[in-house]
Image (cartoon, rainbow, N blue to C red; front, side, top):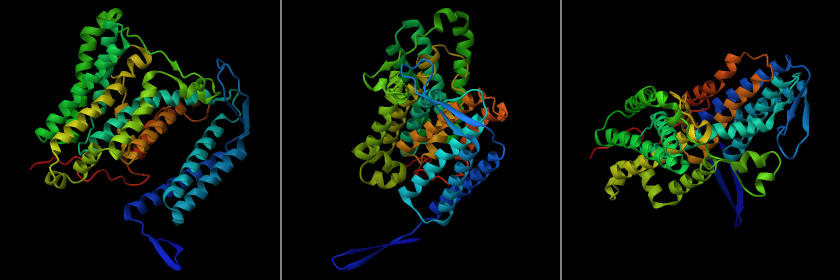
Length: 430
């Protein structure tokens, strides 16, 4: 509890801050996690030798930025100290709100810097910052779409565990339709339509027939994996020269902005799906918090009985939210084929739908936060790939586990228990 005193018209106004039980648990668990990371970095500092190089440009960039060199041991030590100080701030409860979030963000950046510096120290190759950022954007794009799909569904009270299945069906459809037509727009539309069809299955069984939503999501994922795998084996693979050669999206550079060193090629020389992901975050946030429809979505997710009493169709709004979420899942699924390789393989989504679900939970069911968590997971996944090239002493198997360890941390609530909308997953009956 903290107190703020202010003077207004000669009177002293006393404002008391009362921390809820869940907020206190989240603050303390985050503080413990930062403390453990700080101690880990302090231990790694004793295993660090040499300097760490950071290459800010790739060899193909028009403007070549210098390679920055940081001393290994001092950088890791400073990162450990920042993490431990942030842990103390969280545990003592001196700060709240945005100030506390800023401290946590700063500590997270230093933890990443310390870990990468330890891995890169003494290596013959500098850490490729440009490749790390480019890979993060690419890996985060489908996760952002999947998280937004979940945001819309679960704010309306429908648990969507079937994001993975929607991704998979959309990726398969985009690959086959793109191969047959040779048209990227047609393939993109087909991917969206197929994902919306999967969303309709989720809606009809969860909203109309009141099937357990978690079990239903698992069944839909198995259905998507089975159907796409069967069609791939029986139809696509024997005719791969005609049905598995979809065109891929070209990059579109924004004049002026794409020429900015380092960040220009990363953010402003991307495919249309990356730009759509950026716009979609703002669009979903606007729809949920600035429109009447968004207010109705949140009302049926929090208190459907009250929404029904004022004339809101609970089932109708939930249908709309689930189908709208399917649109974003379709865009995310299309990224795996026409947005990257152009070809489809069985289970090409490799669990990205579940990671998007973790980003949704870690982002507290809010579109902007969920998108940031999706970027975080993309960063961790790309980091695991980059560290393998630096001959780091960390085992390769552990590096490959990093994204999934981060997912477990998020879902298990080790950074604080997440509470979704009150009626999330609760079937509505009159």
